[in-house]
Image (cartoon, rainbow, N blue to C red):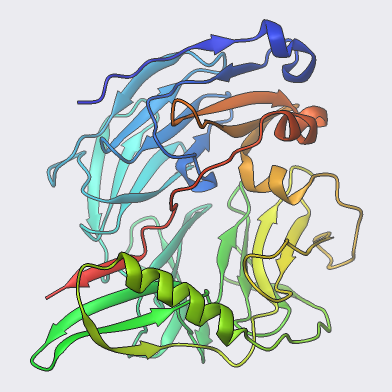
Length: 370
């Protein structure tokens, strides 16, 4: 069991944090927090997923730890590979990819039920009154790919959209055959991306190739489509080969043949984040993935607006509550993660003052199987 140490400071950052702000430097987490690992309630309480010990840590609005729940295992209220968490409709949900399940908890952390998913490879998001599923998953889906809506009972299913080209997620896999070890490698994500508004009222689905975003309501109805005419960028195979060479050097198995899933072009949309003003911050591909980001900010009508937050700030923003945002932090010397409650107007400044420099991988999408 990892011992949890919590240290809150305010005085040296009062100008940035604000009167009710705080910064937890040591949270017992040993990789920087990602956006989907923190959920924020309407009363300001936070639920933070700790992957290493398979627990959810609970904090009040002042940054004080008030409890935790979950454990490693396959029993009620336990997790094996918790990859996502959601808080909506006064319920906490944890997605366990390895177990292929969704565990439901009440707002106090008491276990309610566990639901089995049809596939471990589904992309799933919580919306108000139900869920949306994308069955294109981690590996290439052999059946027709679909975007589905299901209510909270998981009994009533509605087809929202058929996906003609599900693409591939950024990942590599290795499997053993009679002819030797074989592998497949996808250097970038070429799948449609699915995300939802914080209040669960809207669902956004990107086209796998073009700059096109389908906007749906929480009942699965198409509200409108956002489109831009963006020049398509040819995929950089030289970069992909160099990246694969690095992967091969780290492997302890001899892969005799690789299936290289290289696209002809980069997708137009690289990533989307909804900023605190409710606008869409959209990162676009402009060549090698190692190069700088190239974001644009659009309002919900698809009109370009001035960006209020840097892309680095948005990637570290875990959520908002009132006039405050919650940012991830990282102590490179101690190799320990933290998070801070910062005034919205000071988010960019805090990110500049406390940069995150992390050399490890934040990805789990890799596998080695018999």
